[in-house]
Amino acid sequence: MKVYTRKGDDGTTGLLHGGRIAKDAPGPTAYGSVDEAVSALGLARAELERGVELDELLIRLQRELFVVGAELATDPSNRPKLEPGTSLVTTEMVTALEPVIDEITGRFDAPTEFVLPGENRVAAALDLARTVVRRAERESVAAAGVGWLDDSHVVAYLNRLADLVYTLARWQEGAFRPVRTEH
Picture 1: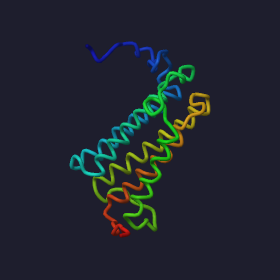
Picture 2 (picture 1 turned 60 degrees about the horizontal axis):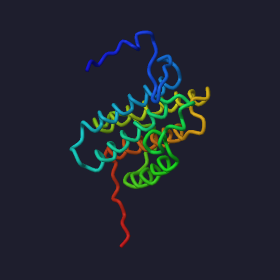
Picture 3 (picture 1 turned 180 degrees about the vertical axis):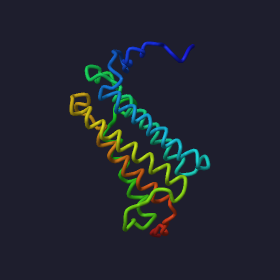
């Protein structure tokens, strides 16, 4: 099997469940940034020991971004073919990020001024990932604006994910505060 097909030489790309569209159309533009976000999270993972809490969480987020990408890579006429949680972002996916944000936020003191990325390699990679997620969010808003994402949770998911990745970066900077547990 060859990696190249030559089908995209005309400036189009194939969509999930069929059809072709210009590579610079809003849907492909947004899912291209989602793909970059997956890679940026992978850069952060590459700095971690396998199996630690953050590694496992980043794997989960990368997999969820594949769901986001699948939805963005589907022509609106084929949305009924998407499967919730597999190729269609669900409300539950969005709300499931919130307790993670809250729990991680409880591990450090919130910054009191603008954050300068680069405290360490993991936090810097997470800050880069956050900016890519925010771009994917903006591009998804543009895709929604032209009818590509009717009745979708993609924008909300990316918004919440950017908040989580910001939180993870601050946590990894080492501004730890003991987590209080009630007995």
